[in-house]
Length: 421
Image (cartoon, rainbow, N blue to C red; front, side, top):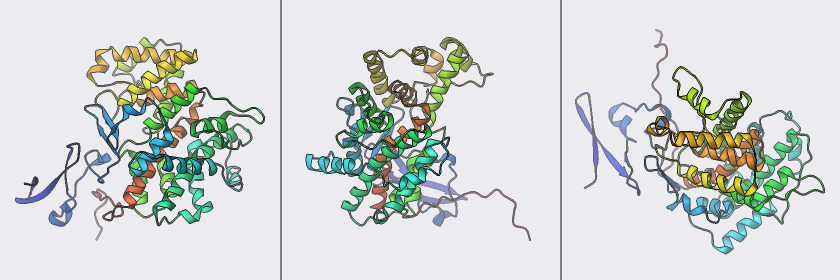
């Protein structure tokens, strides 16, 4: 027997179906609520509202679970390959060798940007926020590749998705270099995805940058762990924009803007800013934690706790191991990293944080790793965007293929001035 939810409004009982997901999560389907009752629901922040059915990613915040299409996130640690995982997220199965080779070929051969796109960069001041530039340049792809603004089949979609994943790293690297007055570095067709990005970031003419294999492995895993996370703010934005039939480039550019916020993709920047503040003010980690626990103090311990996870963020567990191994093997000495590791040690053993489920989250460790690799702080959120792009593309594609999709149009409860007679 199908489960039914009953709602009584003004003495009248209404029935609504209960939908159960494959992992047992339950939802009341209220899609007919307004037509039946004249009422809507009010849910600021949409924390109790399911906007879609999706087969891409599942999280369980209470149990600390995250899996991509049924594969636990922990299984991607042994051989981290961002391109392979990205293809898997988008198309729903691990690529065979033919599919992987075809996709990699497009990534390699479409990595460069049209020479005329460089003229657009010249219109931005060198001090422009990297996320603003990145969003604008992703939108510009709609102008340079109009043939992909209408995707009529899977082959065209794969071509568009590959171009987007390939070119975002080129655009990101040039955004960074131009802010420093450095020349554009062309992508190297002999390098794999992550190595090529670091090459375009840090090479100089006639002096190629040689990335350490440990750094490449760590950055691959950072990107994989950011690739998707259910209906977060930026992913929901991509879906909302895409529901109007906006093209893939425009929809993902909107996702970049949503990710830009300090409460979303900018959180790992706040972690480094906190560490810099502790170091600059000659505070010990113990002193800073004491201030963070003081209710009269506005200081917050950044990088701890998560809206979804009431347990240890599974991504943070992986990055904790990676950061420890990476810093040890690289022999990196950085006072900020020493402060971070001590903060982590204190918080994991302090009842105040344990009782409040304030465990280190993915932003805490990703900031440490990116800093150790040499990524400047103002590029942290850009790296987040590169990592999250396959997830955005997967959700756009999933929604675009749903025959029941409707343009997103939330309701509101009006509290303004009543109608004047």
